[in-house]
Length: 237
Image (cartoon, rainbow, N blue to C red; front, side, top):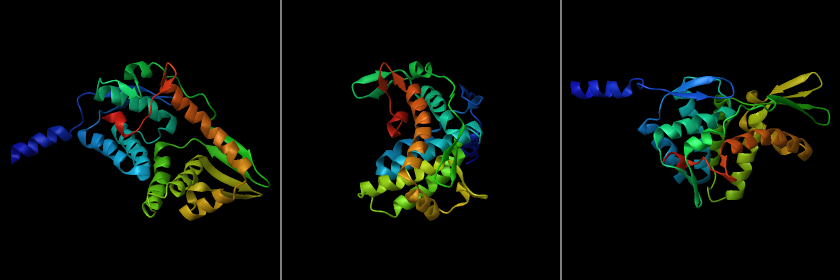
């Protein structure tokens, strides 16, 4: 039917309006969510631990696709999704017995002022840290999802261990020892895990401190009157 084809062409065209969002790196325009995108975010909540990783990946994919920006960093995520959620629904966000209008949380916005890079010293080596883009994060998340699928999803402890083995490497750019340099992105999944499992705990603790600054920033943007609102599959219902 030509009418159906014409109507779908209208629906698939760029939306008439775009959402303006201020992020740490730049002011951007983001297209509203489609129903298909909303489904991809809401339904991941049914997949257990794997679903948590799928949700983050799908969320990043939506932001990249709808903004046409491929250099947004992970600290840009919260300002964008708050704007998308406000456009999607006027329904308040709920957290336990409390609720808040999304617009109220959007007023928390401030630019991320933490360090973009850091160096952690180990015994005879250095770990160069950085803040990844959403695209770089998704490459590692994709590998994590594939590994989690191979496991018994009821083995919660092992699943969490795998997630941690992927979470920290997201922020490692490279290792230096002597005149040698190993780029984290050049390593296979198994090699990354081998390195992480053998890093001294005092080194990983310093890496976690670097990561914590970004997590704290995210929490500040999502907190109102002492309550921090979760971003999960129910966020876009």
